[in-house]
Length: 326
Image (tube, rainbow, N blue to C red):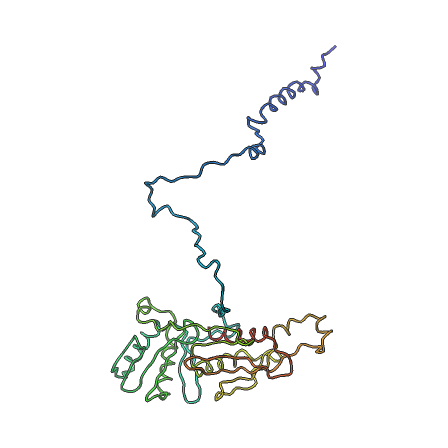
């Protein structure tokens, strides 16, 4: 009679039992260490100390934390809100490299390049046309010639410049036309040396503030310059029927009348529409008024309709419009 261990199904049983016993002995200190127990027995290690002879310039705090020097101080008044620079005016409203602005008989060019990039081109224009340069002052941004005076300054929008061609305080149209054609044919990319020619920027940025419950935009530029910029972009942007429309403009009063649907009105859900007295979303007339105040201007949004214009609606419209100037 054959032995039980000789049966194929049972001949590996002793080997399996021996392996189980061996592995159970390795559960803590062998190849199959249970590391869950390690976390319960962990002890803190002493802090790392660098030698005194180390290079202090090479070994510094990777993420230093500044000291809060204003802890405990009280804010006496609300800070003015400075909106971030806009990345884009909007679809279809990207400025051309050279554009003309005009208020009455006064006209000038807006170039989508820094003054440091435009200045060398302005000098090259005067030389190529043989205007007879009498004086060239890069610090003032003025080139005086026998026929006209070319002047350069930073525009309202960041990274742009304004160029004028005048004589006796009046625009020389032929000169401005030729300058517009000349600059339009040039690339907007500045050479490395042109950045060192001059930097006329440095003007304060516009600010949105709330005063007496009303939101306003304070712009550190003359009302005439600001109105010309707003006129240009409102004409391009406020062209959507029943959403935003430019109805009327008054250069003498530095004002615009627009038909505008506020974001809160446009965002009303169907339930809000049903349970309100206005069963459909509607726009309303609002006056955008520029108030000259010395060397700066204040833009206001004044309700010109029977519908309510909340402070949030007022700020939302002003932020959209002031975005043309950044």
